[in-house]
Length: 389
Image 1 (tube, rainbow, N blue to C red):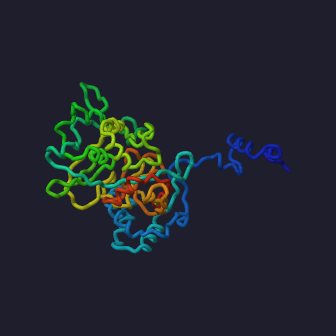
Image 2: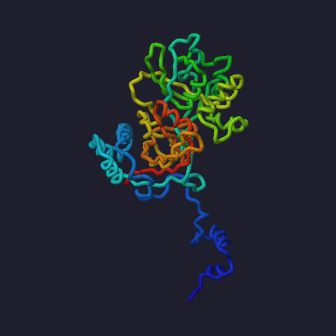
Image 3: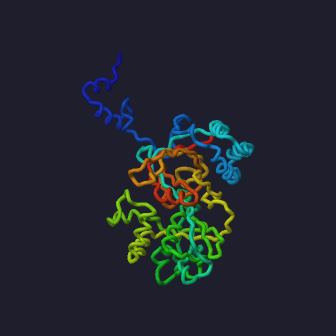
């Protein structure tokens, strides 16, 4: 009988040495740890592998499914067939939704960088601000509309490998240069003067509105208007919470929307310095308040606790996602963490949302939404529900 030469080696080499050898000549039994899974949407799994799959109130997610059908069915034939059937279920039970999803979709585990199944789950919300359509002694901090001087250059026609990549800038003579950053826009020269759409009574609220991407503004007469995302200046988003950690002002565990806001109010002389650490600047559009949630990157109204922002280069917009994580404790780090396992839909994107296992849950509006969005920074797992062929 012809002997496998590796059988002789195994008598004298330890398993660790065999695993090193496997890297050179191919995988061996017991050495899979040395072959990390590729990041992104991975192999299919069974429905019972989804933590909490049988417990979610799936019927409450159905409006989010139907809202995105208006967009996806026009773009993709496979979604058109699914959406036609979905629209026949006007008010389905949890069991009916679960049966529908299991019939038409297949769950796949999403793998993070380096093969890890866990990633970061955060949250955002629709804040309420106070403002006026006219500046006065109280309302002095502007929100800007998208300026005409902002140029957007799409690169994919000339360079297909850069599909989806855009360059934002402005013209000086015949040259395109980077657009104004936060320090310049909020500086003394006021380069965007004349582009104001509304004035706010608190500069910090105006800043955090840019982080959230949309919100509602109550006017002096008690009426409200919505402000929605209209563009961005092209500069990379930078976390000012991370800067406070680097400066030694807060610890990683202490950082939240509330502790950052408190620091800004307690350090007025350094507040603008900190804000300028994030050069990204968001522009807005005024909209009538029709009671709907803000619109995300998929251009459908976001549904509280059923819509999420993702990295669209890793997870296609419109993809149903199963999330398994926990909610942050109410009373600091010593509080109890409650499991949070539910069906979401990838309907938005964000400047800080990068990587496969990365999601930003839209929590809606109100005090609970603000608390959860301001403190959510939990480890979690994601599963993509992919349409069956």
